[in-house]
Length: 319
Image (cartoon, rainbow, N blue to C red):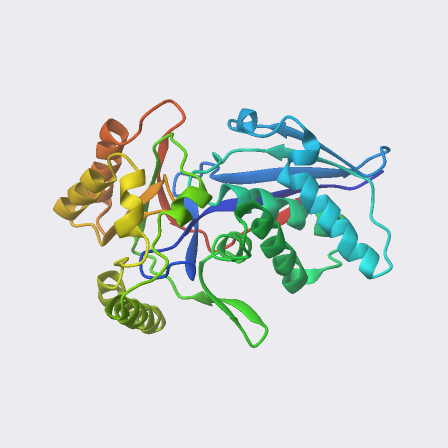
């Protein structure tokens, strides 16, 4: 009997205010709800790879399976095996698309990570963790136009990831704060990654660059020393948020409401349109969730969750 594996890859919030393109966090709802993409993979009698899509947001994906990033993952994984003189299996993959596209929750990254994890599981973990991560970065780059890891790394490894890309180290895990509650909200509208990048200036003032570097260094130090107050004070974005805020209706009001409730930070998740607001007080987090459900969610596609950092990340298990 052929083996069947099921892989899960969580949502992620990239561009954490202090770390544009450099810090991302994997997220999981505290009520146990599924906030991530799932792939079930099995051997197939059909040559190559077939892809089926199901789930709440499957209708947002291309109908042609060869235009699905999951199919691209198979093609690129196959190439990696052939470089090693290994024969790829014929497989069928069913993608349960639970994350909305262009939402700022690492939707494409979750599909990419789940696909690569599933493919490596059924092939006996040929690529290993580093090989898988490199392939995930290439696939994410195919979608966004440039290789970056601030979604795929936290989605794959879990936790709070600092992107390094030096001395053969792609990312490293930062200690996170267990007393932080993340209110993550998708309003139901799309903001494309390309549009969000185009709105950014080509150059920044020296003072902004210095401020960015200072706060990033202080945040990393605070994570390693367990200083949550210092970490929270550094969660200010001078690189992207001042320009992207105009792309997300209601964000400025939501951030102001977060300040009134004592939020440690309220920021744009990835390139938007999702936002997050961080609290130590769960009651205040509840108030923010209620506010966002009333005033920020624009249609039936929107949702809001209480989350903590998902320290497990992506995984596959035989079923």
